[in-house]
Length: 493
Image (tube, rainbow, N blue to C red; front, side, top):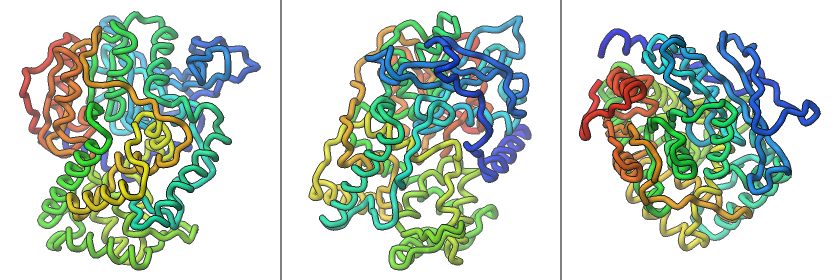
């Protein structure tokens, strides 16, 4: 690992562990109806946020329901960072975080760890545009007062009574969200969000966009390319997802890859000086902690008198596996802290640009619901327990399945699998071991975008442009020259 990469990892560790607060001052004041800002027009102003110095903050209005363009409107929030070398500027690069993730806060994270120092051509030759998707972050965010998963509700119900409580809570939660957010709750699907992106492109006055999407936004990029052929010059897709299979198959595959990531964590932890559990049987320690918390929930030191069950701890573990050099040591520390009687760290998502409510609500629209009865859920629960003896299948796709049981708004999944006409050949970057997405998802998405190449990276991370010089070099060559690496190339740094 070279010196620059080592420094970047250390900085990323410090920033992520400090947390990135979404409750920051407004990026740009929303344009209210009385200001008469026209739909589709971006209102730009200098950012007042010190971390976005010399950048522009913008707001534009789009319809809540694109089938009723003259009805209710929402505000999209944007931040624009101009290219450092305007004489050689090549275009506009749209940054997209995952579902429920703020692209603006992801840009803030990149700035905190040194952007533009490590970015090369990406920041020299391209205007960067971070736009928070509808319902997320700074863009008319979905807020619900009902807790997403209160005490006494299980996502792994073991009897009909527990199943009934889960479904009833999901209905109450959805009703609460609709009361607070109106029709927006039914319009945060992939297709509506893709239509927003086209409005952004039009508002920017550019013929084509360049796309950088992470996780869920790899599917958003595919959806946008299908709806608006020819509008993308390049597509960089980091940690692709595969929505060509059934939701149950996706759960099985994500369960397997998350369990593999956990096993890799425990193997590393047993011998690493950076692990607070070095020398321990880490898997046994974790399993004992989960069993203890299921018997007697472990308190959280936040003044709320909350306590976490073993299910809660399992549910928080997947996101601790996403960046090995950063979140693996933090997971070990969280286990040790919980063993001492304080489970607080399992209430903190290491990626603080995410909002769990804003993750779930779109998932209830974008995924079909093939499971509806206790018998079906119970069979799946038992299968997951066998496939994943440590995490038990507590992964995001399972949460999307059971968290949407009883949801009153119908799902509107995008049809996927066929070739997308009018999309550029994409650079798909996929880790060989990643807790959120199996490596096989990379080729599955690339197959829908003719001419695309999967660049593998040996390791466990996502958001790989921040972590790998090899990935940065390949990405920048693709952005500037539209040249893809050879199929089968693997980055090992």
